[in-house]
Length: 190
View 1 (cartoon, one colour):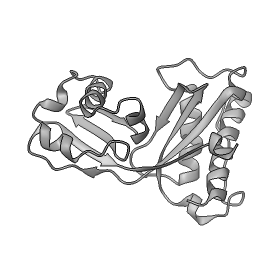
View 2 (cartoon, one colour; view 1 turned 90 degrees about the horizontal axis):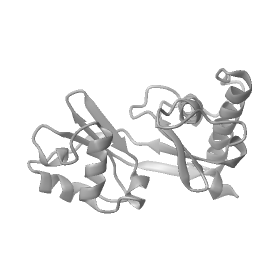
View 3 (cartoon, helix red, strand yellow; view 1 turned 45 degrees about the vertical axis):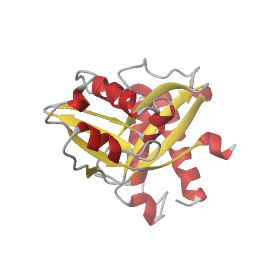
View 4 (cartoon, helix red, strand yellow; view 1 turned 120 degrees about the vertical axis):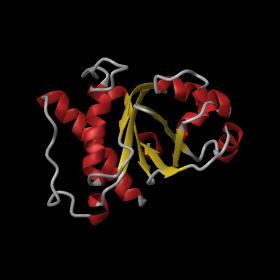
């Protein structure tokens, strides 16, 4: 994606959080204000907020169901104020956050016959992973490989995030999907 569009999306994310902090509602975004057609293509995104390198919120969508610019705006607000792992972002914290946007490819089902075959097909640092079993589901963006570079540890943590046992990836009936991202953050433009 062009640098210009990355900067626009990062600015929209920051503006959406600022507007919500001040007004308690989501900012209106129109095609008139942002007439670039790429911004209006349906894309799935995640918005990750950090303060001093520590996670402060991360919310996203996996399936592309709304325009890129609207997905970024909504996910920015949700990461700041609706991530159940954190208290809502405060005005004091707002200037300290770094915003990272990940634009996802459409997830693809991974075909495998055994846990070892599944692990062998996963590419650390490249693949984001979604696991599903019954009503349980979770995902890790490819960036999580930086913290969990070992495949077994990565999957154990992903299983726990989904509310399953840490060895769920070794059991029958697990569906696995992979996707890739184009990630960029405000720090990239400082």
